[in-house]
Image 1: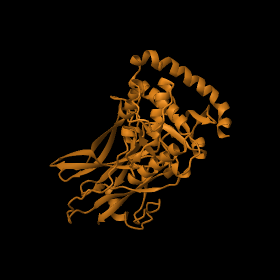
Image 2: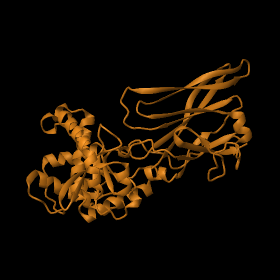
Image 3: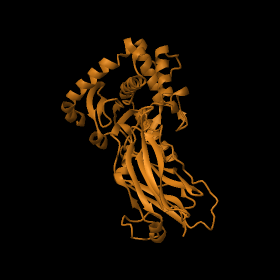
Length: 397
C-alpha cells in the first residue's frame, strides 16, 4: 500500500507535530489560551479525524466528489473545495440540492463520540451542546474540505484525510481507515497525485474573480484601448495544503494636471488555477479592462504580479514602488511613483516596464515580436516572473 511506503518517512514529522500540538493546543484544558490560528488548526484536525472515519461510506465519498465537481463547474474562480456551511445546516447539500449524507454521518459520529450510543444517520435526535458547537465552529470559521486532482478520482475507494497546520504547507500527517483501523501516513504532492486526498482548511476566501467584463464607454479618439486577454501559470506557487495559486496582475495608470502627474495602481486582474490546471498549462480568460485610454503622454506602464495569500498577518505588509515615466509638455519627461501594498505573505513576482511606443507599433495580432507565442485570439503573450504569461485584447490602434 502507498501509505505503508510513506509511514517510515513520517515518524520524525509525527513526533515534532505531536509535540507542538501538545505544547500549544491542549484543547481540553487550555482552550481559552489558544490563539485564533491555533484554534483553527485544532478545528481542522478534529474535522479531519471525523472525515477520515465517515469516508468509509460509499455514499459519503461519492457526495464529496459530486459536490467538488459541481461547484468548480459552476464557479470558475473556486478551488476544488466545499464549505461545510454548504452542507451542514439542515443536513442539506445546497450545491447538489439534496439531503447531505456527509452532514448526517458527521452528526452520527459526533453523537457516538459524546454519548457512546451510535445513532442512525437519518435520526433527528438532537445532538449534544459540544457537538453543536463543533458544527457551528466549522460554519463560522469558513472551514472547507478540499479534494485536489478530483477529476482523476471520479469513484474514490477511500480518502487519506489531512489538514492545514502551522508547520508546513507542503505536507502533513494524514489519517486513513483500512478495515476499520486507523493508520497514519504522510500526505504530500506525490501522494495526492496517486491517491484520493481530502484536506481540511480554508481555500476559497481570497479567490473571488469577476466572471464578466464590465462595459465602459470607449472614445474613438483614444489611441489605444485594451482589455485584459488571457493568463497562464506554469509554476505552483503554493504547497499542497494551500490549494491552487491565485495570480493577481496590477497595472499602473497616471493622472496629469498641468505640470504635475500622479501615478497609481489600477485595474487588478484575477486569475485562479487549480493544481491540475497548472500542471496541464490551462489558459484562463481575464474578464477585466486593462486601460480604456493609454494616452500619448503616459510613456510607459509597469505591470506587477503577485500570488495572493489570504492569511497575511494584520499590520505586516509589503510596500511596492513602481516608477513611471510621464511626458509633461512644459517640462519634459519626469518620473513618478505608483505605490502598491500587498500582504506580508503574498509571493511578490515583481514588476516589468512596458514602453508605450513598442506596444503601439508591435503589439499586433499574430505578431512574433515578443517571442512567447499567442493567445486564443492571436495576440502575443508577455512572459513575467514565476512562470506567469499574460496577454491583452487590443481594441483600437
